[in-house]
Length: 423
Image (tube, rainbow, N blue to C red; front, side, top):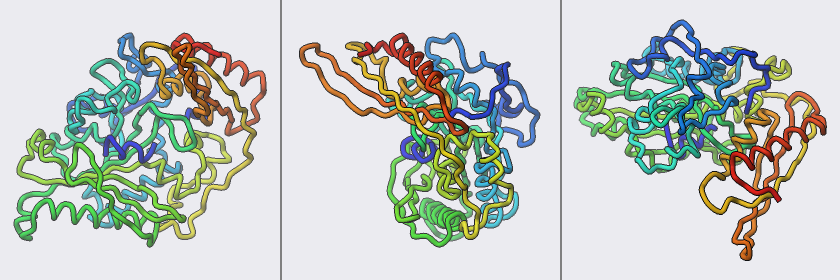
């Protein structure tokens, strides 16, 4: 599922050492996904740095982001994201029959702006199209913001019941629950006219009823017998649109977004005589809740104290008796504040742009970036911001020397890239 709150549902730089040659891997099928749906079992192909970091004036992809392409955390059977993906697939096999829902998890993450936005009816003036929110390879090509970017081509390729899982990319804030690369799963189910004609039920009512039943069952499969509620929502690609919330550990938690697919999408796919439902969810969000993982950066860690705690098949329906993550030593944070005057003109400074500068310098060593003070100076006609940057390694204690070096580089980049005046 795509923009709006569906993108909020799930939102680290990895702790593993990167290879000296900056080459990442996708799949042969994903190379051609903008033409046809992927073949599930395909041979890997190289994704080069120049494929994503280009000379285009519109390009805003950093090395920090490029280095995440090809990690495929969702395809690792012993990884929390792979475990949750498998649990969801198991539920769909049990409910609809083994293999009824085709599964795709090799889609190429570089897509056209049309596929990412227009094909799912995102309005031309929607905030998600802004380079403040989206990673642009060039003016017509982006790193997908959501797995729905593959929906139209899947439908044109003849898929009628499918799950698509993949890494998605979004410029975002820095804290324990947000990371610019995360993983989504999308599900789509097409109805033929005979299905609603044989029951005498309105097709939208039929699709919505099955959708709710399916997703309530999924919530019980993942969380057990929990209280649920449906909340009306707006997504440009579904009508009606809904969000499913569950009451879990004393609070209401948004689990997923869904709805009955807009007819314009079906008509564009040559399926104007059909109806469909679709849903989308974030794997990190579910894994953090189900396994008690406190920081989203941990999903990128190769530290054995983390990885050894997760094994294929460890999921238990409803979470009953399932082993939870046990935190290991938490190393001390290092707090650095930076105060500055905002530029008088232009839009070079935004919080997302600041987070990109900090990430590109400090990677996974940055835990949080937070605005702690703001004031106006009427005499100067300037606005002052003060942001607190929290550095903390997930693996070791940081030295003052290395943190000071990182902070000095961040400050220099803020001036050269964001046009601020340091105070």
